[in-house]
Image 1 (cartoon, rainbow, N blue to C red):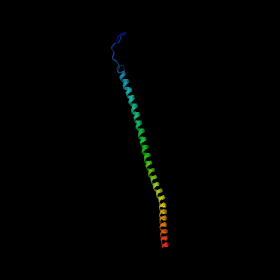
Image 2: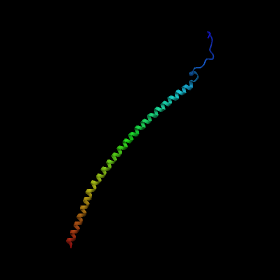
Image 3: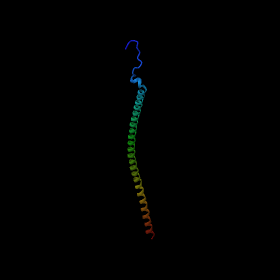
Length: 105
């Protein structure tokens, strides 16, 4: 090219021709990366919470069974002496009634 000449119709570079499209694609990729990262973190937090919940549920079921066993044991221990006392008092009153009948006749 001779000196002092001016290029009027040079081809545009890719950046010059598609600048806004390239910026839009970059921003979209950046947003997608952020969203995927956030979703992965949420999934991890949800799974961790589910595992903790299941662990607590198992512990609660175990403690519930233990409480039921203790309640049944206490009920048995309380009802046996009461039943024995009731039977003795019934037997005593029956014996005294029979003795009174024999003595009275």
